[in-house]
Each structure stands twice: as structure tokens, then as C-alpha cells.
Image 1: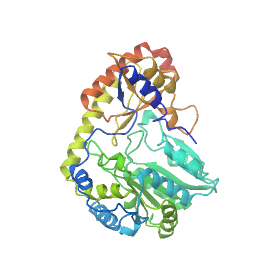
Image 2: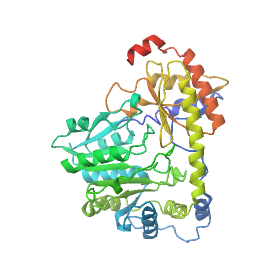
Image 3: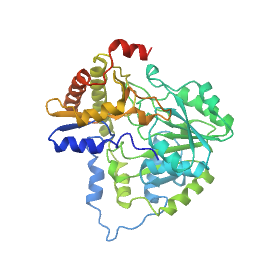
Image 4: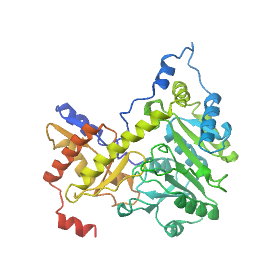
Length: 398
């Protein structure tokens, strides 16, 4: 089971804090945006005398209301095609356990959300990676690269759209190219769409549920964690029109009894959040993104493409090893009695040896804190013992 590249450095952050240092947490997707008041009020006003189990598939009232919301996005769903899960993570786990047998293979563009590797490992499945490059902004690799990896054991393709850790937003044309592969080889297409509200610069989101001919192939993972900034309620959704697949996933849902009851109360109430909330959140994330991208691209030898969605960016830095660098930031570095916590990208690649000069940054702090964090990063790159000279860095990345 692989370690989390996001959480494995927590003990070093705790040690830094014990020394009195301020740690700017850019390592994890925990927004500081306020949870909608309507969701908090639903929890505060909960008046039942017993907190009961829900249906294993989740409360029907919530699933019906969620189906109506999808119809507002132009996606026709019945509530029985939605299963409520304990976060989006459980939806991924149920999907892989339902679709893959031991030794089966799943193709994933990398860098990828690290838990795909963890849950594939738990399912006894094998991850085959197609590498996207930072030079392209992590655009979808050519269809031919996917075709090269398809074997009789290939059962699924997984994407995250908009992407974690890259922030890349797949175009409709890219999704249609994937759909063509999926239909020709009769594969499942998993789309982790938990960041779909966060698209920038006029870019439009397309769900795989909107693509024709994928009724039995498409599986969508959803979550309220990032959308409503309430990661701790642990409510996600597993969505498919494939009746047999939903029936299989329900067996796993029955085995864990039910999703969190109070979390469903908050999630159902959150569906009535005003559009103005999202308008403000998206505008705020654009400001934060621009700070991070602009500051990093001004640092000597560093490069950061501009993300079109989510709230993550990957930066390539003139360093020898991102794991060593991220640990050094917490153990040995401070600037104005502060340091910054980043996620080394080695853990976001299935291909060993990749990501050594890349870090993931979650722009989840306010602009002032992000500026201070970028100050720390800029100063750190000047004194890091494993820094690579500009000439050597250019040669390595030629």
C-alpha cells in the first residue's frame, strides 16, 4: 500500500510548529473558504431524537434532490443511479472493487490522484500509467499512447476532471477521444468530477455523463468536500447508469452499512446554496491561482503552467529531489520564522523516477498567506543544499 504523498510529511510539520514556526499548508486540498451557512444550520438545527442508519445507498430524499441538480446541468439521472458514499474516496474504492478482479489493469494519465494507486492496490489491480507532461500543461496524452497499453486484462480508464494534482481541465474533444477508446475496447471510464464547479478563464466543463453511447461504461465520482468546503462531513457519490454495476457496488455499500447520517443532512441542505456563493469562490480561487503562478514563474529556474480548474498547480523547481526538498523545508528551513509545506510529486506518478523536480501546490490559503508562502519558497530555493544550477537544470529538462 503506497504512502500518501500529501500526508506523509505531517510529523515534520508538527515538529516545525513545536519549534514555534508558522507552517503555510499548501500540501493538502483543505480550503479555508467558509462552508455555506445553510449546511451548518441544518446540522445545528438537527432535531431527531436518534441518529439512525440511513439506507445503504443513502437517504432517498438526498439522492432525489441530487438527481434534480444534475438535471439542471443537462444530465438526466434517476435517483436510483446515484449511491451516496463516505466521501469521494469510497466511491472510487467501490467502483474499482466492483469492476476489477485481481490482476486486471486500469489505465490512468499521470501525474494522478495518489489514492487511485492505493485503492487499485487494495483491489488487487495494476495501474498502467500514460504520462502527461508539464510542457503541455498536462494535456491528455495522445490516444495512441493509451492504445499501446491496452491488453486483455485492461478493464478501465480513470481520469480526474478538472485534475488533481494538475489543475488541467479536459476539453470535450479530449473526452470524446477517450470515449471512442472505451467503446471500441468495451472498458469502463471512471471520471472523478469533484472539482467541476471550479473552472476558470471562460473554460467550460463537460461531464462524461453527457457523452452519448457510454450508458453502461461511465462511472462518475462526486463529492461535497471541495464544492461546499466541508471535507469533514465525508459525503460523496457513486454515479452510473449501469444497473448491474450499481447492484454490485450496493453489496459493498451494504457491507459498510451506511454513509454518515449527519453528513447527509448537511449535504442535502447545501444543495440549496445560492449561485453567488460559487461565483465568489471561483473569483477568489482565480486570484489565488494567479498569485502562485506569477510568483513561481519569476523564480529563477522554476516553471508553473496555469491551471484551468480545481485549486492545484504543479511547479517544476531547480531541485535534486522533491521528497528531500519538502522534508528539508520543514526540518531545516525557516524565513521570518515561517516555512511552507508542499506535496512532493513523486507520489503522484505511478512511473518510478518521475516527479523528482516537481511539487504540488494547493492554493487554498488567502492571498496574503500565499504571498508569504511564496516568499518562503523563493528564499528556500536560494539556500537549498540540493539546488541545481540553472545550466544543469536546463540540460536535465531539455
